[in-house]
Image (tube, rainbow, N blue to C red; front, side, top):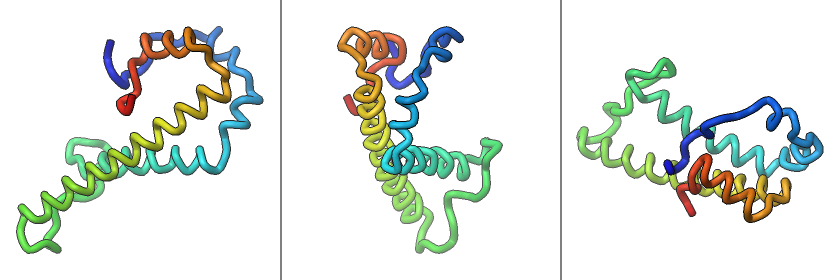
Length: 120
């Protein structure tokens, strides 16, 4: 079992059977804020990755006294951003589980397919 990986399979029957009323309840402002925070985290990381097609800027800049100081600052910021994104992701997963009324057996199926959430 891998942690946090994409599901091994999706079928049309599963996806097309998702009740739309639940999706409207999940689309709350809190959940949208959580998703935006997760997106910002991923986009930020890709924007400073020189091999990414989303590369925009170098992660090191001349505004720090030394390269070591800037690298340390970046590492601390990246860890802080990762923790926030994981917290938001866990909160969103809890909301989805609640709104869909997933049983323990269904939650176990999801864990077997995708893996435990990194914060579990």
